[in-house]
Amino acid sequence: MGTVTISKKNKGIAWAGLYWQYFEDLDKISAANTPLKLSKKLFLKVNSDTGKELIEITDNSQLKVGDLITVRIELSSDRNMEFIHMKDMRAAGLEPINVISSYKYQDNLSYYESTKDAATNFFFDYLPKGVFVFEYDLRVNNAGSFSNGITTIESMYAPEVY
Image (cartoon, rainbow, N blue to C red):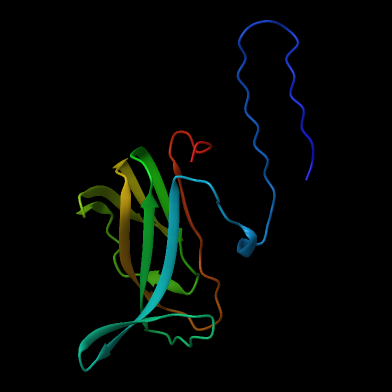
């Protein structure tokens, strides 16, 4: 995409940082060699004869206003980490069921979940090595065709590291 050259002419310690920002189609973005891996799936929650059932939503799924959707995010970490922020953006036609921000504890993991207008944020003071699953519900509030939001995760104080 381009060439950048950084040089230092005099003696002594120097610090530098380079950020290259550009636009790309979402389906072409991937993170290969990172200690954190994310997987996100959406499920339609329906009542059946045996109780509540989750049906995976695909590109050709037909949703109606009022349908209940369960978001399932699987987070995998290959090492212990501190001060991590995961942001799960949602489609414009969906509204969260739980709008109260609070500390939560599950699977030996403590985190703060904060619901905002366009995303749900997860803040981890300490993220141990392992696989963790997060689920929350959304309600379809508008008819139409919407693109699902992306989920990102990064170190809060050094986003260039992870």
